Length: 167
Ligand code: GNR
Ligand code: NI
Image 1 (cartoon, rainbow, N blue to C red):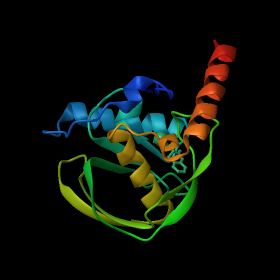
Image 2 (cartoon, rainbow, N blue to C red; image 1 turned 90 degrees about the horizontal axis):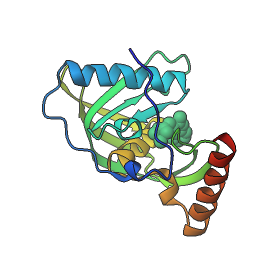
Image 3 (tube, helix red, strand yellow; image 1 turned 120 degrees about the vertical axis):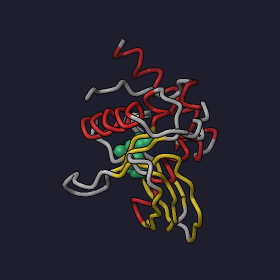
């Protein structure tokens, strides 16, 4: 296993659209394992391949208290959505920034697991938020793009300043 470096907003590579995985082989399973290790170490509740500069439709999620329920979703698709919820979101690619985003309350998702087997999942609450946040990443969208242009400008300025301090 290996820890992977996480791209930081506003890196333009975060806006690439990930392509579907055609064959789930050892390379994809290694990516899933490395992404899980990277997510747990961060720590975070989800990670999209886009964030580690792998532009394939692969996501890992674990919203459980004890970090015991790893979900791997390959080629995830939202089949149905309903309701609305507002959640204070954060992102490993936008460190130190948290803001409210409105998303669907419930989603039904179809994906392939790490063995290439199709499965469906009904999610609500935080898991539903996380699934939507990760699929956004695969489509090249970072959560701050749900915020106003004014807020996006302030966030870019703040991160640029942080980057100057850490450099
Ligand atoms: O760790 C994370 N926490 C989180 C909190 C609220 C809404 C979404 C998230 S996802 C985030 C990890 C991440 O950046 N995934 O892309
Ligand atoms: Ni994120």
